[in-house]
Image 1 (cartoon, rainbow, N blue to C red):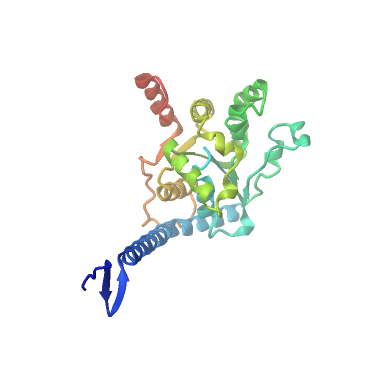
Image 2: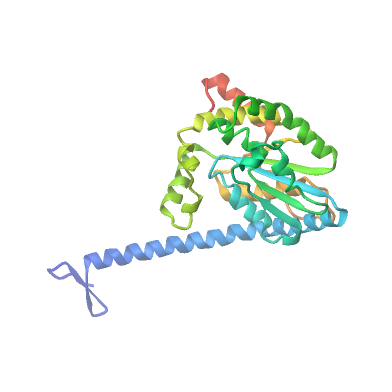
Length: 298
């Protein structure tokens, strides 16, 4: 290869400019990066499959024994709830699970008992219902943005443990997952939503205010978990900065909540303590943050 005076290079008998060479190199590097991302994504999905196969067994066990299961997915916007729900249900029998994501209450619903709109979506025997946000909307979004009155909020906080104790006492398997993401990671995910036309539908007016109200949400999270974590209906916190780890550990938490038949004992069901934290431990961590720094870190 030789360079001529016009800063052009001869390659295989063709003269190519320096700019063309740079662009070709950048394109090659970008393609390699995209290929590596695609390979990593395929590898990540493959790691989930053995646990997704176990979820099918769990689902069949619930069907055979006519048991009911409710899974709550709570947490900040862009914390990874929706993506996890898709991985949980990907291979399940559609006849025996439902995903429920309710919008803001109608005028009629505002006059009803608060839990009424949720109860109508509760599972029948042998069914799993996954709530993409649940009655805890009252304790989080509605509280932070003043969409409910102080009395409505206090009534909810005073009554929810009793409500959930009744559900468990009546045989419903209740799993409560709270997805905890860092402020920087949430901002990065919001930015991706803004710039990706396939994700822009996810970005709401509430999302746009989430970063500004970060501290309010953190304080509300602390109070909610502290007051509503119980022996019968405990919270499990999922650190979701790493989406793949969060999804895998979520599957494990769900599988560990039911003693179903045919479990593959060769799989590792032990939880990653860097990702999965009990509600009680999360409160200890947040109490320590207040004591040492005077504020919550996240």
